Image (tube, rainbow, N blue to C red; front, side, top):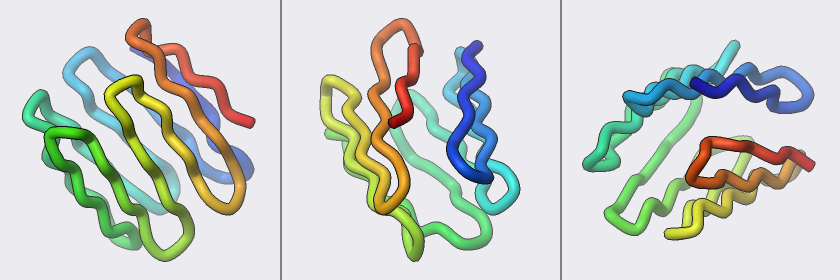
Length: 87
């Protein structure tokens, strides 16, 4: 599993089963078919191409290469090995 820190206030836990826990504001469950549940403050749309929209605070774009852009605070890159880079 992977543990990642989202600045300034989000903790993200990545498990092999694609469970993402965003604290304190958001719980996200990613399954192999790419649905997700975000509570309570995020809207997320996961398509087979893995497009995600998080509202109100951030925009996230997941491409097949797992590039994720969070606005306004961070850029993250997800690699197949579950390495995350947050800038």
